Length: 108
Image (cartoon, rainbow, N blue to C red; front, top):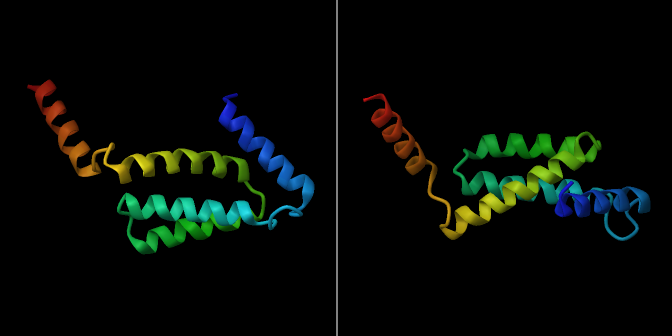
């Protein structure tokens, strides 16, 4: 397991062990919803879809259903969002045109 995932798992286990003594019990659910919303807005997801995703992630995290999976995916989304926000990652439209041109070139 990668070191970052080990730290996330340890943090989740500590949160469940302390029952929120150091931070609120649902801090992970709220952090997840913020990460997922930021990623959705940065990648141009319509607001109503972003809200539905955020509600589902919050409820699932609060019910402890897939909490560590959502946290891990949140780390990946946060990294992609930071790359997109900084301009290091091209917009999706540019990816689509590049892929379409490559397919057209390979088909010819």
